[in-house]
Image (cartoon, rainbow, N blue to C red; front, side, top):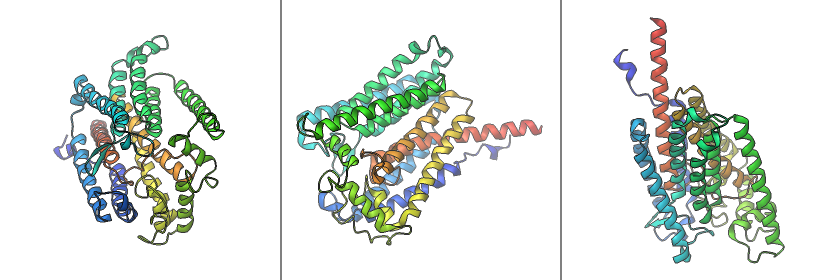
Length: 400
């Protein structure tokens, strides 16, 4: 093979959508942070948020490069994955202890962040990567044992450990994070060797059961049967009837509607949003898509969704092409991470799902999400490059 054929290739179907999302995210975080600084003692102006977001982007680029060139033989080592998982578990346990000892640090009803000066670390984001790497390593080792008779024994341990991680996230409580971990687990396990209809059927059944339970509990709270309504239940109540609760729990959703309606197809212009000036809470994080719709229109929102689903589609294609089940499970795990974050965020902004506090990939302000997704893209680039080299070698052999 010629030497130039071995040159590392960054998959354009992943890189260009990532670059578009990141640069647009930097611009819109700056624009959407006009009023957020009033509540942040570390940010005197939107420039501070701009500088931080640029910093997260640059660190993310560095992580992409590192993990794209990282040897997977190192990553597959048990001590590497186990050490990473151990750190995540310790951080999640720390959050639970923090919730008990320092209840004043609870934000929006949850103790999900570790404050480090101007930076908030969210361990549940890094738990997503931990679940993907752990399940991929464990199930890849046992793939030959995943027959119908031995399936329960082979996957029971990994599943129980994954549910343990989910429970730590749920206790915070971070419902969106726990549900994301749940779906990542189901999708990774579903391609590990068990029949596809069991995986798909399990997802539909469990989601339906959870939806019914959540709706029933929300109904009991609205009737006053369970005492004071927790923040997470208020979100469900606001989802059911946001206009009735527009002065309290429904304020985010109703003002999100106003922002989208104000923007129309082409928007009112960058910087000209009305809703970001104290009307729409979390304007630069959870509801940044509503500000984008107001300032740049629904057309830009559609372009964002196309870019994200290009990455998701590419990850799925790489999983299908892969001859290595370990690679395939990582690709599906990454695709599920992007998919769940996008669906939960867009669904919350549009009123199609209860608000979960999940950020929009590479668009919303926040370091934990950007760094995690950058690492995952680095893994995709590595797998994509190996697939590219394999196809070149196969072409050369066929020509010979």
